[in-house]
Amino acid sequence: METLLNSNITNIIKLSTKQRVVNTFKTSGVFLSLAIASIAVPLLHFILVPLFIGMALYFGIKTYECDILISVHQNCQSCEKPLDSNYLSNNQNYVFRCKNCLAKNEVKK
Image (cartoon, rainbow, N blue to C red; front, side, top):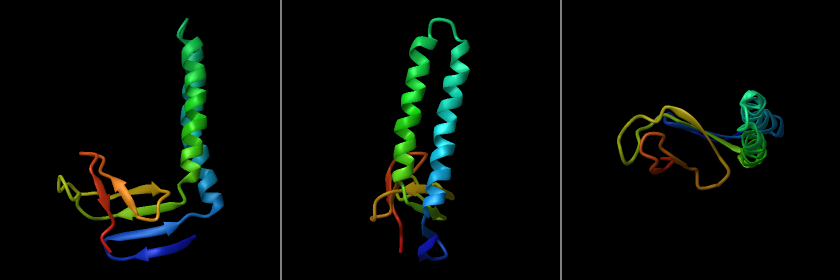
């Protein structure tokens, strides 16, 4: 785990391979558990099970590609609501979206 930026507002950490695999299993596990639960739904399970398995694969791969953890303690640049949260990112620009208004935010250095 390598710290790329450490300030009083933001911490940017490069995740190790082990941490990326753990995040991937967490994300995939949610969708795989939904696939298992949807087996009990009559007729819809023919659609839901393959859908959730596909989503587990897609979001698992997307999560594994995210190798940067951004821990933010600042306000959104659009809606001014606090962004006290962690975000996974795979780009070097450190851009993430606000959960309230979905506006793109950049890390203030």
